[in-house]
Structures are given as structure tokens and as C-alpha cells.
Image (cartoon, rainbow, N blue to C red; front, side, top):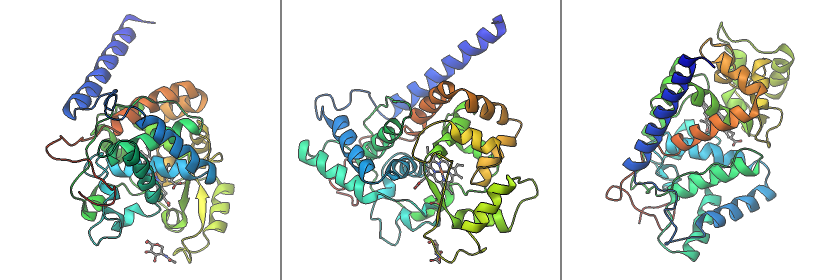
Length: 323
Ligand code: HEM
Ligand SMILES: *[C@@H]1O[C@H](CO)[C@@H](O)[C@H](O)[C@H]1NC(C)=O
């Protein structure tokens, strides 16, 4: 390895440590946050998430996306869970279409309240449920710092403004994640979350029936999507299509799929061809260990975004309403 390459790696490592450190100190997060107040918190979340996954193999995907949609709007503060049927709730935003398993988070919360009342925030539960979902699907075991506080408010307009559309440009995609302190490698890795789960026709038809000039899909794959989503305006919201060919396994199949033109959303395809991201896509496609490491550090950063201080947040008693 050349000297300059070594220096580059050392600098990158220093930058990474700094960002993580800043994120942790700003929000008063700590790896042993519940050591005295709720020592079994992580075990309880693990047990609950496992039981949901055993009864519905698609549950882990839902929990993973839930963390992203929570953290992307106001920060990781469980704002997405607040008053889910209310007129101003984040769930009113069309960008939250397909978000599921809110009731299950409330169920985990009830189990934690029974064990240690008033201690574990809903925001930490969302982050832990996502972390467990990755691990039990075969992905990396990621240690995350805890101590997030829950917001006292939410607003669907924030969700409309900050949740990305499936046809976001690679530029806007990179800006979104780099603004949270993820580097290029981590930004490409976090989208590997699309190794799990599914999408609805609503989010695919634009790509099928109103294609962008630079979009390219594998023709067999495209024909299959058209069969599953046969009309430009979906006649039903019941049809779902897998994100990759192994939708319940957290692996690097997503990167192999998108390289073959089998990415479900425009942005999935986009990162496989953009000159800034395509080399990383190719490396993640052949080196799952490299993908897992990059995904893990990306996950810690994303799930530590904009943490509320004790003064500005609370620990809700129920995830669906402020205290
Ligand atoms: C620019 C960034 C992103 C865009 C545009 C995007 C877009 C989408 C869309 C449109 C869906 C399908 C929703 C549906 O039709 O039901 C989806 C599903 C999903 N997304 Fe993303 N996503 C992005 C980033 C992420 C990130 C960062 C994560 C997690 C860390 C994530 C995790 C997931 C998962 C797990 C699913 C499957 C959900 C399920 O099966 O219920 N996505 N995404
Ligand atoms: C599907 O869901 C979207 C978003 O909630 C809605 O606008 C649309 O009318 C629904 N389509 C059908 C056929 O129910």
C-alpha cells in the first residue's frame, strides 16, 4: 500500500471517528445508556422483533424503513409514530405510503413500560427494532448508542419536504445523506437497505409509463414489472414487488441486481450507473464483508441524526401520543 493511500485511510478514519463522536456527544447518546435504568431493554426489543418476524417474514423490512423515515424527518425522535391518524400526522404524507408496523412498535413499548416504566424512549425502540431486523435477517450486528428523546410534535409538511421520492436524482440522493455526515461509501451502503422488503406499484408506475431518457432496465425485468403493475394509475394498492430477489435476507444481492438493470426504483438503478457511485456498487456486489462494514457505520450515523436534548424532548408513555 502506498504512503499516500495510507494517509488517505488514516484521514478517513479520523473523519469518521469525529463525526460519530460529535453525533454522540451532541445528543447525549451512550452505548450503556440503560445500564442501570433498564438493563434488559435491548434483550426485550430483540425478543419482540424476533416474534414479529416469525409471524411475518416481511416485518424486518418494515422496521428498517421505519427508522429511516423517522430519522429523515426532524431527526430520530419517533415523530413518525405521533398521532398516526391525526390530521397533521407525518403518516398523512404521501411519502409515508407503505409504512407499516406502527402498532408493533407500540406493542414493544408496552413490554418495556411493564419492565421499566418511563425509561426507554420510542425513538430508541425504533432504532433498536431496525438494528435487530438487520441482524436477524442475516445482516451485520450493529452496536448503536442510545438515549434518544421523543419529540413533542410532528407535522406532515416536514415529511413531505424531507422524505425522498423514488425518482430522486443521484445528486440529490448524495446531498441528502452527506448532509447527515455519511461519506460517499456510507451513502451507497445505506441504500443497500433495499436488500430487504418490497415496493408498491404506486412507486414504480412513473418509471414504467413515463420513463426518463437515461433510465435503463433489464427488458425481462421490465416486462415482469409491467405485468405486475399493468396500468399507469394503479387500480389497486395491494400488489407489491420485491426490492431484490432475496427480499427477506439481508445480503449484497441488491447490488448484483441493480448492476443487471433489476433495480426496483429509479434511484436504485441510478447509483449503479452514476460514475461517482458505480465503482462502490461493484465492490459491494462482490464483497459482502465490505458492504456490511460500510452499512454498519452508515446505520450508526443515520440513526443518530439530530437527537433531541433532554430539555426539548421527552420519553413518551405511549408512542402514539405526547405525555
Ligand atoms: C433516496 C433514498 C431512498 C428512497 C428514494 C427510497 C424509496 C423507497 C420506496 C419508494 C420504497 C417502497 C415503498 C412502498 O411502495 O411501499 C422503499 C422501500 C424500502 N426502503 Fe427505501 N428509499 C430510500 C432510502 C432508504 C433507506 C436509507 C433505508 C433504510 C436504511 C430504506 C429502507 C427501505 C426498506 C427496508 C424498504 C422496504 C419496506 C417494506 O417492505 O415495507 N430506504 N424505499
Ligand atoms: C393508493 O394509495 C394512494 C396513496 O394513499 C392513493 O392516492 C390512491 O388513491 C390509492 N389507490 C387506490 C386504487 O386505492
